[in-house]
Image 1 (cartoon, rainbow, N blue to C red):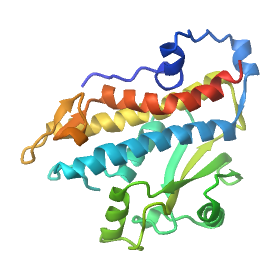
Image 2: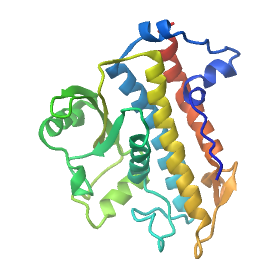
Image 3: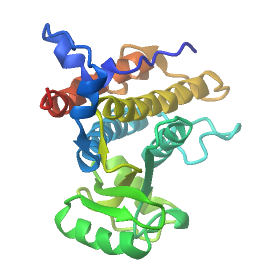
Length: 269
């Protein structure tokens, strides 16, 4: 499958271009002077992640299940014809990011995880208690890893999330409800501030991760032998047994996420 990911402009400059603006070339001096705090950057990428995951969870998994599509934690196994569950979609993004030279870390944790390895401990467990109370992000410096860390509430935003976790054979909590704080996405970065160029690199690293995992899902569908293959094109599962191409999926993410990100980026001009 061709690589449809194009760095930089997709998420951050979409609205500038569509409104007739031309992103200006940044000099090295400007790049250094226009620094963002690590908290600002991690909040930007977290919001992009919220948009992407909500779109995938509701428009792909939720609507897809109604069309008979299957989603499974073992979706990569040869004998399983299914797509990734939302948490595994995020894990795929995190895996892609780790392969990227940008030193951005991402993982999902909870106090009641399906996978015991994702259970919060120590300081993160304490901070998560506060997140469950007010849903506000928590920022701290991880002395052991020497990484600036940000935790953001991960909500049960769709019925697909609730039913999957409540019915999972390994669940440690079976009474989740819509709107519950199910966990927290945790982001990490080694520096306390980033230049404009470094900020763009972080956003691109995340965007590439979403494209990588979604394209892997589409490649998986091509290998289906027993299951009916959805038609891949411009339509979505809400319209029938369809899935959007990676280009269409990414374009929808851009339209939903770009405005907020753009506001942060142009504020430094």
